[in-house]
Length: 298
Image (cartoon, rainbow, N blue to C red; front, side):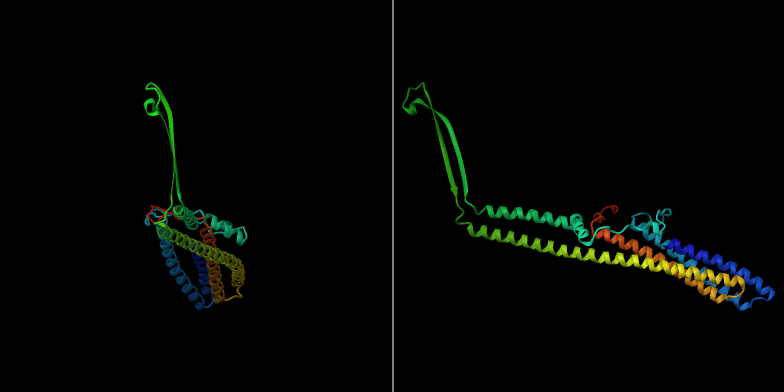
């Protein structure tokens, strides 16, 4: 947007410089008053100062963009592939709002992480409940006994076996186990409440970003109509001035209005890009790594 604004101001300066040269010729032959020439010179000086401000702003924006990308702010200029034209707009979501909301739940890392916490907490609760059940142990042994012990000859061996069954009931630790189960159940309820709260938050974010995207698209259409109207008004004033039936003041006003309309259109395009990116962010399409990492990943 800063680049396009600079180009628009430079174009206005070129056009106004041409008007200034024509007026100088008209003043020499007495066809135009000198006041009109002074107005053009004043407007041209103001545009030159505006150009200096726009160029300084563009340098600031470029530095901020490089810092956002974790690059050296004083490095070489960035080669942007997006010229902020209508063809370069990010596509908005094609799905209905409920479908997009479900996709957000399926892709949001914070929601997925909380779901994993709930699964782990359910396992802890099952383990705590299992500790209250009776414990049953079953063991068996088999061996061969010497004949002297069985009453037979010394040289013989007889097989023998043993099966043991034990049952342990937590009678004295039952209160402690019940408290553990209650605590684990309370923790599970807390996670469920967090899940429901996060779900409502995501629903609100998706709804708001959808509304912002629709509003941004409406602004683009309105700004485009404004540019067409301002361009036509500026063209008419240029023709009137060329035929000698228009005034320099009307021409300068039309040029200023045209520049304002172009700036509004560029701002609307940038606003749409931001709104579309917000939709991708809240639906989990875009994700940013941990802030301690060297760079953000998209």
